[in-house]
Amino acid sequence: METTPSISADFPFESNFIEVDGFKIHYVDQGSGEPILFLHGNP
Figure (cartoon, rainbow, N blue to C red):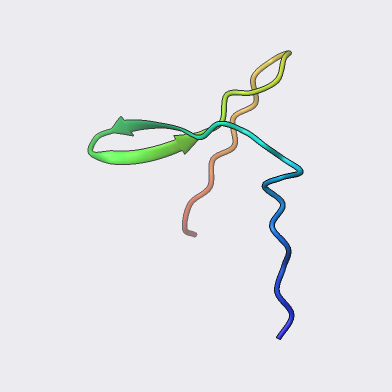
């Protein structure tokens, strides 16, 4: 079985978390320019 190499060394970022309505949400606050918000969920 082939494993996928870790990309964390290529894309270092600080993990941030916020709690909303009892749910812990992970976010990344990096870079410059206008903010971009990506949301995902279960269909």
